[in-house]
Image (cartoon, rainbow, N blue to C red):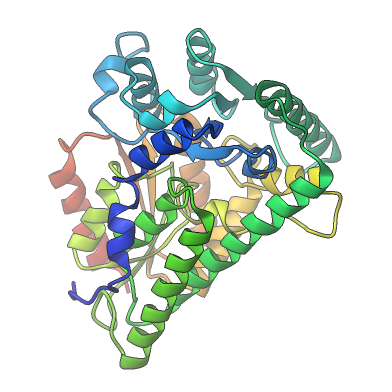
Length: 384
C-alpha cells in the first residue's frame, strides 16, 4: 500500500476520540441528545427538535462479555456489544442521551430494546416487512409520525414544518458532500483506503458541529483533487478493486476491511449501512417534509426487508460504476437475514455482474483473522 494520505485525515483520526468530551460539554450547556443505533432513525426529526443526534456504541468486542450476562451467547455480536455498552454505562453517548431511538429491524434488537427500556427512555419504531407497496409506506409513515410526537413530548418542543424543512436541507447538503467524496473512489489510483473512508463516514455520526464537519470534508476533497492531479493515491495504480457489503461494519469491527487492504486490494466502496447506504438517497425537498422523510428512510435496502431487490440492483450498479474486481459480503454470526440474503446476492451477481464473490461469516474477535486472510488472498488471486 502506498503511504500517500491526505493531511486532512488527521482531523478525522481524532474526531471520534474527542466526541465523548464534546458531547459532555454540550450536555452541560443544556443541549438535549438523542441516541440511535440504526440508519432507519430519521435524524431530520431530531435536528428539527433542536436536539443533537448521536450514533451509539456497538462495534467493540470488549463489552460483549457484559452483554452475555443477560443475552444469549449465540446472539449477534453487534447486539451483545450494544447492550454491554449500555448496561455498563461505558458508552458516553448512551450515558448522555435523553432518549434512545430503537427499531424493529431484527428480533434480537427488538428484545434488546425491550430490556433497555427498563433503565433508559427508549422509543422503538415499528418497521414494515417490505418497502414496495403503498401499505408499507403508510405503515412506516405512521411510525415516523409517532416518533415526531414522542420527540415533541419528551423534549418539550414543537417540530414545525419550517424547522423540518431546514433540517432536511442541512442533512441533504451533507449527503451531497459524502457522495462527492465517494465518487473520487472511482479513480485509479484510489485516493483513500477503505479504512480511512470508513473513518470519515463514521465520523459524521460523532461530530456535533455540522458546519465544522462540512469544512473538514471540503478540505479533504481539495487535497484529494490535488492528489488526483498528481496521479497519487493510497494504492498503486491498477490495484485490485473490492466492494464491501453486508452487516454494519464500524470502527472497532473493521477487521475484514483491514485484512483485504493488508493483502493489497483497494476497498473502493463500503455499501454497508455503516458506510454509504445512508448517504445514497436524498430527502425530496419538493414534497411535504414529513412524508418525504418517511419515504427516504423506507427506501433503505436493508436485509430486514423481504424481498429486497433494491439492494441487489444497487450493488450491481456500484460494481459497474466503481469497476470492481470482486465483492466481499460480511455477515456477523447470528445475523440470519444477511446470512440468507448473502446467497441471494451471490446468485444475483453471478447472473448480472459476473464478478467473484466472497462470503465471510465472522464476529468481533481476532481469532479467525489468519483464516480470513488466507481466504482473502485466494479470493484476490482468482480475480481476473
